Image 1 (spheres, helix red, strand yellow):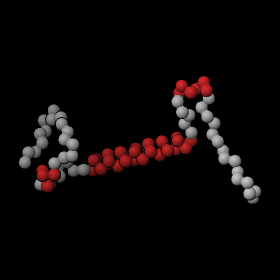
Image 2: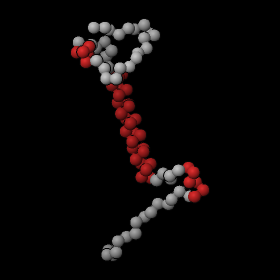
Image 3: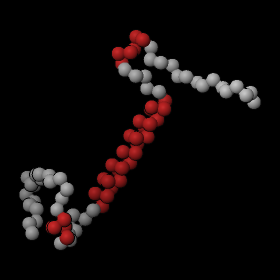
Image 4: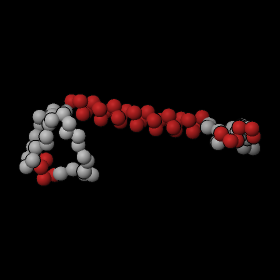
Length: 85
C-alpha cells in the first residue's frame, strides 16, 4: 500500500436551486432516522401487546395508595365508574 493517505469520499451538496428545501438528506442521515423510527414502532407494538394481554379485572390494594404519575381525566361516558377506596 501507498504511504500517502487515501482521499476521503465527499457526498454532493444540495444544488443551489433546491436550497429552499433545506439540507439534502444523506444516506447516513436516512439510516439514523429510519432506525429511530423502527425502534419507536417496535416499542409501541410491544406496549400494545402488553396492554392487550393485561387483565382488566386484576386488582391489588397497593394500587390504591400508589396513585398515578401525571393525573389524567378519564371519560366515563360508557357508564363504568372507577373504584374509590
